[in-house]
Image (cartoon, rainbow, N blue to C red; front, side, top):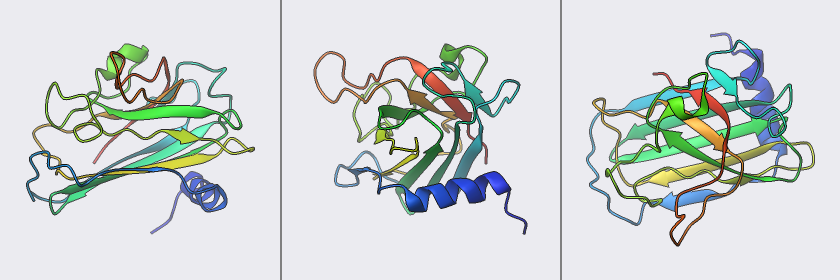
Length: 185
């Protein structure tokens, strides 16, 4: 099996970057069910014309920026990983799974994917905030205590302009949409 060069670059950057934060919502029961194994992924350089990796804000995702995301669900648990490279150095970003695939306009990816509809929390959503290093690389991962269902899968991972608000009336928000990766099985 030949590994794409972009993936090798992203994995190398991930090893060199400082460890990313892990959002761990496995202690909260959110209707976990074992179900089947599901794996989604998306990767690419945020370049004009790329439909799998779309940039909405070139100031916050400069030319050459790229990302790779993986969502794996089995045994009643879901683990999501994100690796980025070429973003602004030493800056905080938010990232979330979204309901629909990326589109030409930021809102086309739809709202945040929620395991329990209407519940805005790290127990129901996937929040992947990260801080880039001096070279603009970063990573984050999340673990959730629920399994994905083939009937309702997230369609994308969206990188946001700021970190996720964790309490108050703005909970779950992380600013404008900067870039988007479409997730596919």
